[in-house]
Image 1: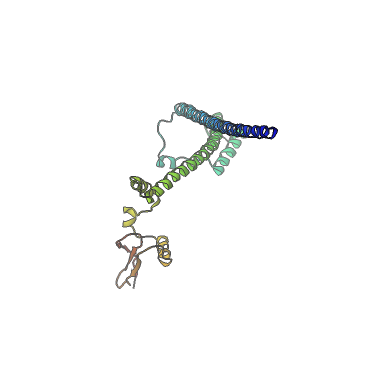
Image 2: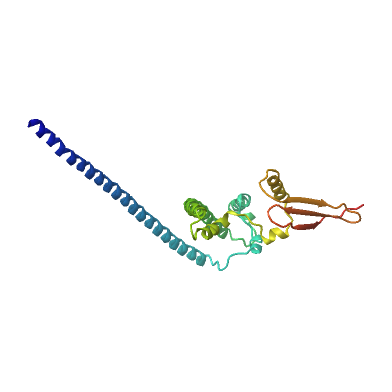
Length: 259
């Protein structure tokens, strides 16, 4: 009777321990799910705060830019011709300006007639402030560029995941996947534009096409014909039929050759 009682106790304890393990595993799963959801919510909040800070920075910098343009009376941006007419202040020119200012300041008797030395000193101080602002904006622009590069890398990798998924679905002949896959595939194909067809291929392009043909990476042919000049000059004909299905004949006039 004692043995039977012990066996019944063991049998009774076994389901209880099994149920306890199941409840413990469920609790652990709930905790991991809660942690994951908490991390996702925290990342969403951080992303929203980052986006808001960037939008605030754009608004603030736009206001500063407008104030600067109004204070400096800069109505329109200088074009290329106008900029060429102005003197810049690189290392050499700025050294010339500083040395001239030192001479004017220390030698009043050698100043040009009706020359305002005080105004020149104020202009130098303003220019130094502009230069410091320019260097600061360069650093800020470099930081923004790095942030853009990091975001673009993330976005491109996500786009690659979309592309790879559509490629697999298209290979599996899932209805509607092939046109979507081809819409993304065109970004990985290099096609010749109308301008490239009308212009004779460069030597570098011919070398690339030649290497593709030699190694069997492309179909087609390259034919180069050179006609020897008899009277004035000659022409060279290049047929590059590597990338396209039909040959394109291009002619260019060479320099005149005297007999």
